[in-house]
Image (tube, rainbow, N blue to C red; front, side, top):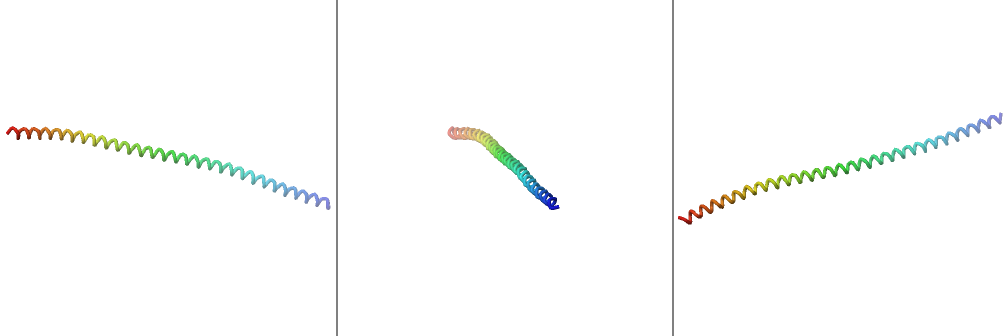
Amino acid sequence: MAKKDYIERSLIKLKRQYGKDEYVSHLLKEASEKDIEIGKLHSEIDELQHELYTDQEAKQITRQARTHARKEELYISIRKRNVKLQKQVRELRKLRDNLMSKINTQ
């Protein structure tokens, strides 16, 4: 009977030890899986940050293009107005010259 108790106690100890080893290996496996998941999440974060940076660059380029287009439109508008005003100045100078010549001839 003592021998049976010894065998049972030994089996219980082995079972407990095996359970602890199994539990430790399970925890190590979970930790490894979590490390992999953390790595994937870091990668995803980096990808999203890159995407955000790219979007911000695209917005800035678009903003600059719109500003340049507005400046170009404004320049064209002012240039047309200047041409029109120069034409009026020439006509007014001709009129002035004609009136001066009429005054000088009288």
